[in-house]
Length: 329
Figure: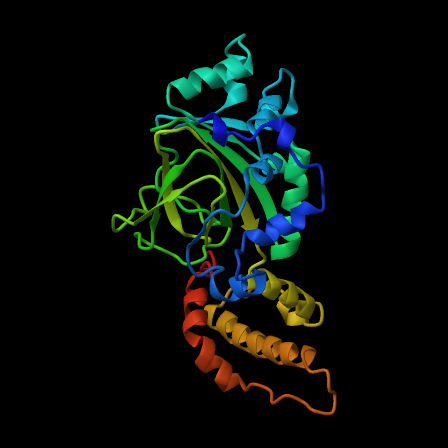
């Protein structure tokens, strides 16, 4: 086991490596091809992307040990997952006069997984790497570390509301990826709450093993679970929160609403009036949007008619109108 544990003496002190390491998450195809062919579409595993020394720079047991020092602010960002319960380390410390490192050791012996959240705020190299990943892939990044004893399972099947890159640092881990599960929604938005009763795997999934230096990409909404092989495991998750088109559309609609009085008025009490106004507003917004993209003022785009907008959105607007509260009295 010892030969797989990068030591602190091997750590790189060179900020220039971070952009290269970030690009390696896309593999040999490169970032552009990855964005076109893989991202938000399917899982992919990349073998041997990082050497021992490079993994040390990303994260090491030496760096994590420093986070367990007494009075360290990082203690608030450490969780214990054991027997299907997730507990903050600080809550356990408040009930004990023991050192954090002793509690963590005890929990690991009992088979618990230790999660170190948001390493970008705790470890300088993680901060640099998170910034590089965000720049390369155009999103907000958060890096967590998971330490799990050999032969133990981590979190049960679940999905994340962000894209995730998994980097195996130490040991190996068995992963199961589920393409199909109940009530599956491709690319769930950030406000979709996890419900273990609602979302259940429909099949046995696809299995793979991650070894040191491997990278696994899991698209947003991809259900997965993981467990250790015979050795203990340390892996990183690099969560990538990208801007969905909905957010950009909402920004544009707010800009358009600054020039449209009706869009800024309250919703009418009458359902039919609400529906009619939504049809007019949708057509007006669509035409405004076309004009914003027309850089040649001599060529005017053909405006969409009200009837065309009704044909496109009538079903959606009918559903929306049904949600409008009925007037009291």
